[in-house]
Image 1: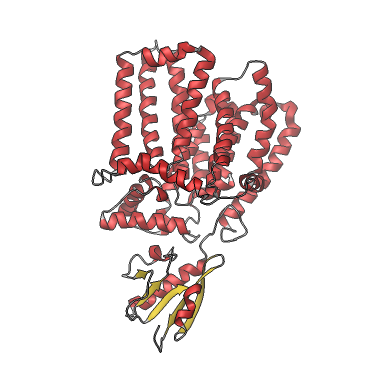
Image 2 (image 1 turned 90 degrees about the horizontal axis):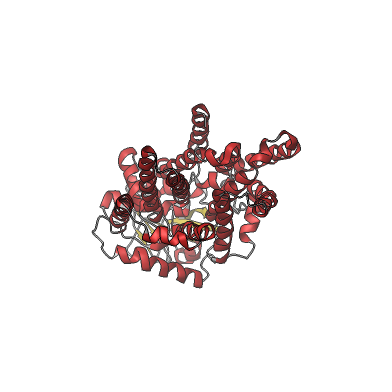
Length: 483
C-alpha cells in the first residue's frame, strides 16, 4: 500500500481515537481497571484475578501513568495505541485483499463497536490487535516456507515467528478469550494441513526438524514464557499466579458460564449486530454465494478458507458462551470484515457492479453516521445497547463535591453494603477517602445508595446523584441524631 495512504489512514485513526477522549466519564469497569493500575503504580502490588482479566492492561497502564500522569485521558492510551496496531497491520493485508483492503480498513476504523471500545479501558482491542498481527505472521511465515531457498526469506521467516510469539504473549496476558483465538488458529492449521497434505502434514510438522526449527521453537518459547511468567506472577512475587493464569482462569470462566453470569437471550448478539454493525453483516451475507462458488470450483485460497473458518467458529463460540456483553462484539465484527473484504474484493472494484458499489456507499454513510453519533454524542444514553450501564456525568459531580469537602476539612464516609460505589474510588484516588460496607465512627457527611437512605433519616439530604442509569447515590450531612 502506498505510504501516503498509510499515513492518511493513521491520521484518521489518531483523530477518531484521540478526539474528546476524556469527555465521557470513566465507566464502572474502566474505573476499576484504572484504579488497579494506579494502585499498582503507587503501592507496587498486583495479584492476578481472572474476574479482572489479564495483567498486561494493569502493568502497561501503570507505566503510562508513570510517564504521563494519571487521568481519564491517559488511562485510555492503551486501547488507543493498540488501535494503531490494528489499523497499521490491516494495511499490510493488502497483499491478500487487494483493493478489498479499503473495505477492511473502513470497517475497522468506523465499526461502532470497534471505535467505541478503542476509546475504552478494556482488553478487547489489545486482544484483537494482537491476533491480527499473529494472523499476518502466520500467513507470511507460510509464504516464506514455500520459497525458503532464498536466504533473505529464511531470515524473515524467523522474524515472523518471533513477532507472533511476542503478540501471542501480549494476547494471553490480556484476556482469557485469547484461548478461543488460539484454538481457532491452531485447529485451522491442523484441519487445513490435513485437508491439503493428508498425513504428510503431521509427519512434516512433528518429525521433520532441523537446526533452524529448533532455534525458532526455543527462542519463540523464551519470548512467550518470559512475558507470560513475569506478568502473571507480578515479577515472580506471586508464584501461584502460574496456577491461576492457567487452571484457575479456565475453572473461573467455566464456573461463570455454568452460573449464567451476564446471561442474555439467544438473539442478543444478533440484535446488536443488526442495530450497530449492519454493514459488515450485510457484506458477510453477500459474500456467502461468492465463497460457495470458490469452494465448488476449488478456487478458494488458504486465507479465504481461514476467514470463513474464523467467522464461523467465532459466531458459534460466542453464541454458546452464556457470558454475553457488548464489548465482545468487536471479536465478531473483525472476522466479518476480513471475510467480506476477501470475498467481495473483485465485485467492489468491477465497473459492472457500480450499482452494488452505490448501495455500498449509501450503507457506509449511514454506518459511519451511526458510529460517530454513539461514540461522540450519545454515549450516556441508557437505551444504547452497545454501551452497557455507562456512568453518568452526575457521578463526576458527586466526586467533585466530595473532594471540595475533604479539602476544606470536612470529612465523610462512602458507605455501600455491596461495595457498589464505582467509579468513585478512581475519581477520589488523590484524597484519603474511606469506603466501607459497614457503618462505623462519626463523620460530617455520608454518601450511600438509595437502598440505605432510611438509615439516615436524622440527616439532611444534600443531593441525589445518578451514578449509572437507574442507580443513585445520596449525600447526607448535618446529622442530628443517631444513625
